[in-house]
Figure 1 (tube, rainbow, N blue to C red):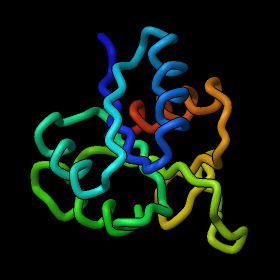
Figure 2 (spheres, helix red, strand yellow):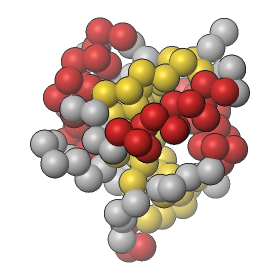
Figure 3 (cartoon, rainbow, N blue to C red):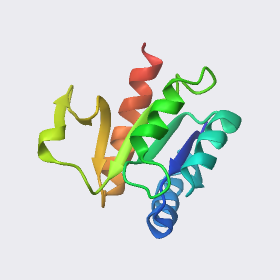
Figure 4 (cartoon, helix red, strand yellow):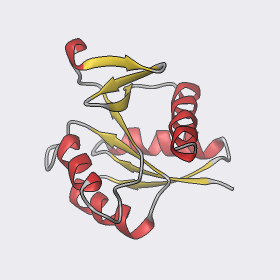
Length: 130
């Protein structure tokens, strides 16, 4: 059964190509939302298995989106992976083989599809084993 991924990112081209690459694996259905406020609503309505979340967005940054998702009973259990090209080395750490930023898994843009798929699967497996 395919996993439903919600991607909240203001970069339309990046979203388009990432969606195509993930769906090409036939393991994921990807919903794109370029507006963070709407992305929060879509997460509550669609109940994705995982959210891919950009950190730097003009309307609302990813850390605020993550805060709202985690503090909403409808979305609090949905895993979040940050995707961004902007992160300071001091903000990055490692935990069980995953790069972390703000206590959440992190993948630097641009990312290779195999690496993204690996991290998505690892995060979903960890959630399932909790």
